[in-house]
Length: 366
Image 1: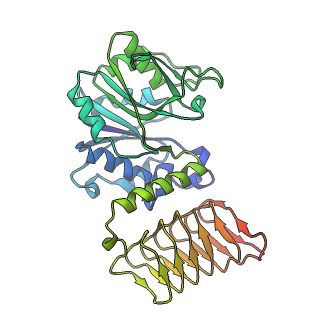
Image 2: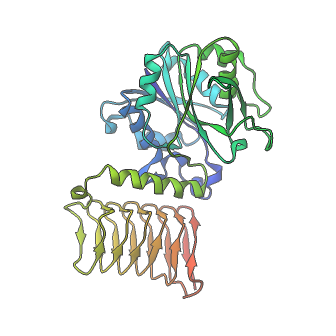
Image 3: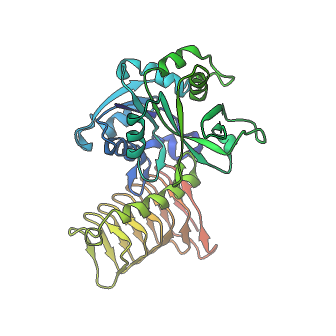
């Protein structure tokens, strides 16, 4: 079985950050989302993975490489010249996939618990496809599945008009297919959006007597396409990362925590980090070579590598690499701050501040 990751989107809903970075490479709990997807597929026993890339392909190639950083993973890149739909991405991946079954995973999705059980179920049953569904509050923003009383798939629709949704079951963005999916993607026509929709391809399978098995996911799932979603995903994944990291391994031996600092047990401190005269309340992750001085870092904050936080209070935020935030007299919260940003010198009002800053920003608050 092979893996197919779709990583060609431009991430317009995450601007300004995605003007200068592929959205799939924005870190969640200090690891790029795309890396988490690759590891999820690898941990399910799949080593041969294709990545569909678009305008940000060069950046993704540079970050991911040949896959060797993930163990015995082999990466093949599949350029998609224009964003013509998920089914189109399958269609152009035919040479890579051949006749093998595969799992397709959207490169900006984060899912609790991995997919090992799903892969095992698919391989042990005579199904042509398996789709992962999740109950959501806003189904009109997604592909939606209607199930029959016996739990089988009746039909699917892509982003229905609000109020016309057949259910609240959204397609999560994780699909298993055998090679019959190529009959489907070659049979369907572009939608009104001008795209080959994967929902139409799956609908074609159901109408032509192929077996599509639905799986309703009960854990958390985040589509990290928007600013608020990134912060939510950061919180969920941070909890999961801490649960998987033994307490004795959470503070690196090469880090420094001064005697006048307080770092609670729910904090991960990575190599070369320095915490000086500061308090860090978890869950939190302090990246490599980060300096936290005379500051308070609150829950669900992740500071990526080579960040400096000095004379500040910050909580429930993501700060990317090489950023400096210092001498801010208000608390930063619910913020997403890009690479190589400088934020300095605020007045004492307002009492809190929320920022969404792209890479290379310079902000002086007076």
